Image 1: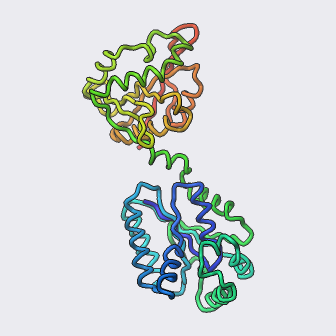
Image 2: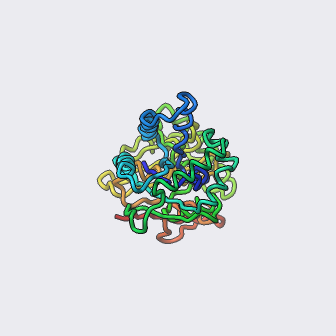
Image 3: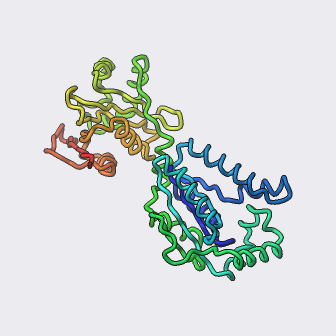
Length: 352
């Protein structure tokens, strides 16, 4: 799991930028005051060890989820070795899962930060900042007594960016971070978490058959091809199901069966080549990114496969676009079926 660590002085905009970043990625936001404020409310004062304990519990539990990662905000004193130790230990926790850590340092002048210190969003999320006289004096004190901005070349982490966001809106700053680290879009990563492939059992073949007919009937009515999956018999599906080296999977989105995919090897002795035939999404769920996600899930299902093959209709540009988006390229000759319809082959070769 990945971690985005946003560092910076008080009121520099760490939380606000994190909120905007959460909107455009599959990262959740855990800003530091989410633990500080409840402890202040209950105990009437700062309890550092308790805040650290609660914070660690959040990290440990979040690492068990299926999110892309977590955004954590922290005001780091760069002149204190204990702060570096904390940052490294937190990074180690996420990197141990195989994830990456991205370090963002925000800087802005004190005048701008004092202005931000009284913004509605900050005060609504941080009750301890609502007494502005105390809060402003605290900000000035921290600037004077701690080094809250890194020196040039001091931070040597692999994935690091320093942004002066004095004149940047939070959404533009978040977009800059996303683009700099090439973070995945929320739509793709969110769908990858919500879509699953679940193997079809023999008892579920009648439901599979009904879904296939519903999904392919519009194409059959358009092209009237005799090889359409819309008119193949349930016995043919049973025969395909019985092929030992091929499997049917229901495509599940949020627990609902929204389509199906058949993948596997035509030659039982050749495990590096796999076919997708057929794949379909029920009409009411089409054009939502589910087909793309299902193909990515199929790739994960058979990681040893280096060549994927499928066939589609030339006259259906949306289908061609989907497969090309997944990395497939056209190969071979066109295969006319009738005066309305032509079949074409696609292949995807996995690099490495």
